Length: 211
Image (cartoon, rainbow, N blue to C red; front, side):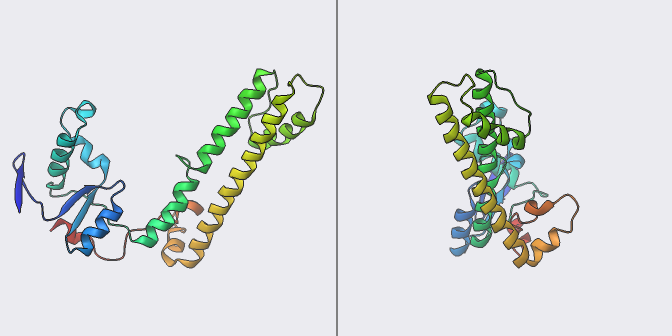
């Protein structure tokens, strides 16, 4: 089956999808022997009519069709289940929408509560952690009866989040030790201990997705 989008013929027997949250659908399509190509969202956006104001299903489908027909379009390989499972650890720990972001937000929340009572401390989390325990136990400050209890709960939550981050780091480090490609990526400048374990593309050829 073929169709025409803005003068470009695209083979719709290949299922072109946005890369975000499409790994499961891509694997299912391959199991059904239907070749699946996944497009990263930032490659599709330039082809959407009316820009951000034109975000709807029709314009999105047309943009995907247009982008998929470009001769030099780069597609995203479909992750295998093991890769997607490892990615779950990165997502939980991550700086965006993960334990790390939650920890930063909690620290800022604690600072804000203390500042309302005139208690300001150095910016580092280590300095705040040390001072927080003293503030909770200090009966001479202006904190009312329930405020130290609230801060104590926040402190316990902070400790729990850091334990979760430590667990994620241990799982990531274990994966590096057991995966040859992750260890090879660790030798690249600027990758870092956690970046090197971000799931790598499947070893199977992906060029066939453009056929």
